[in-house]
Image (cartoon, rainbow, N blue to C red; front, side, top):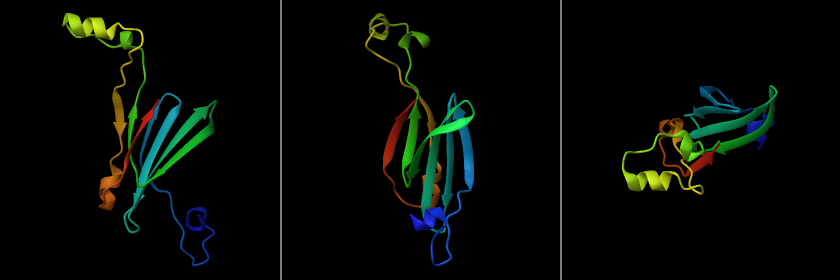
Length: 117
C-alpha cells in the first residue's frame, strides 16, 4: 500500500502510466504496466456527470469486458431453433467488447475475470 500511495520510506514509488484508455458509455477502462516490477493494472472507472463515482482496480489480472443486453437488439440467426431461443425473455446476449492485453507484457500467467457492463 505504501508503494502505491507514494508513502514508501525507501524512496520507491509506483507510477500509473496508462498504455490504453477505452470507454463504453459511463465506464472508462485504463490499462498499463510496470515491466520492471512485473506488475500490470487495469482501472475501471464509472463516470457520472463528469465525476468518477466508482473505481474498480485490478492488479496482475486479465480482464474481459462483456456488455449485457436485450437479445432482441442483436441480429438473430436464420435457423428456427436459434430464433426460438433468442426470443426467450430470460436469455441475454453478452458479447465480449474488450480484453486486456498488457498482462502479457509482464511475462507471467495471471488469473482472468469477466466484468459485465
